[in-house]
Amino acid sequence: MTGRGLRLAAIALAATAVACGKKGPPLAPFVRIPAAVTGMTVDRAGDDVYVTVTLPERNVDGSTPASTTRVDVWAYTGRTPPARSRWVEVGTLIGSVDLEPAEPDDPLGPPDPDAPPEPRSEAAPPLPAAPSRVGVHERFTPGALVVAPDPDAADSLTAAPARRFYAAIAIGAKARPGPMGTVVDLKLDPPPGPPGPITAGYDATRVTLRWTGPPDRDAWMAARQAAARSAGTAVIPDAAPWRYNVYQSGNLTAVGAPAVATSGSAAATPVAGTPRPKPVNAAPLTKPELVIPVTFDVETCFAVRAVFVADGVPVEGAPTADLCLTPVDTFPPAAPRQLAALPSGEAIDLIWEANDEPDVAGYHVLRADAPGAPFRQLTTTAVTETRFRDASVKKGVKYFYAVVAIDNRVPDPNISAESNRVEEEPR
Image 1 (tube, rainbow, N blue to C red):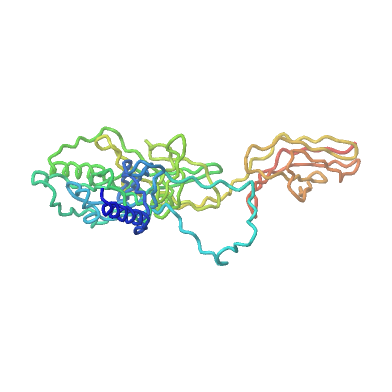
Image 2 (image 1 turned 60 degrees about the vertical axis):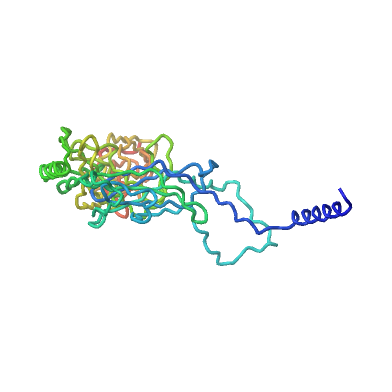
């Protein structure tokens, strides 16, 4: 290489070195996107629909945990579901559940950087478990059941029965949506009508609810048969009888309910948003009756839904009108038993059997100072034990005793009948 060539090579190398040291434009931060939702269930009760979404565990790049900050649930009524790319365009957003609570405003402003750190208690409660599922509630309106135009459907499918389709999208940081996940569809057969009105009664320990079966069972079955014939399918009524679920009406359509723990599995998992209401009864009832423990002085409202197994799938119908009940405790305890009196020096000791009622607050001792004289209350406060010593007696005088039990109702407790009467005098 000539001297001129060596000089050109040196200049080029120097220019390359300078270029390598030059900073380029800043790169955008990398944002992880949650994977598609693959777990979702849809449950209909009358005109109420509950969608439960299992959150993805990973991001689309396989990293964990999933960076999900929100879940959007979409619905669409048609004969076939829309293309995945068109859900946001033609579907209806029926609910969004935020998974990152907003930071509350601090009225005192930002913390002082020179201030000592706040002491941390060793007994600080643990942080709540992150939800693994979200729930969204939809109540059908006439518009929700209108079949939407379906330009993607083939002509051969236009006679298919309409369905309500549901899909969910997990949203990551910076509002970046994940891919569309599993699509679940729901039949739009008419649900059963409500059962007959509820009646209720109660005693000292339990409430008994009763109702009658849905009066329109035959009409409902006929409507299902007609819908099946128009769709070209056959419906064979199930031989199973009607069953029933009873709800406290505060749980009937728990829109906006806080996150709760469900116990559908051995390990309860929290559900954010609106979970599916749980019936009072553990399993659908085969008889139109429910007996539950009584709670006095608290108003509770109940509603009943009929459950019919159609084509092997439980269908829950519309609810009855609410029945609201405020039981009042007017039930006194039983009279104490086996009262006995024993002289003890210048006093008389009384003993008796304990009452079995769980709401017994104690006992009062009654005394008469002569045969035929009226009994008066000897104790100023209730005796919680089943014994009492009467030291306000005189030798040579015969005294007559009885005991009554009182319950814990406030401000006026219920008082039992008298126990057996006994007589004794100090020795």
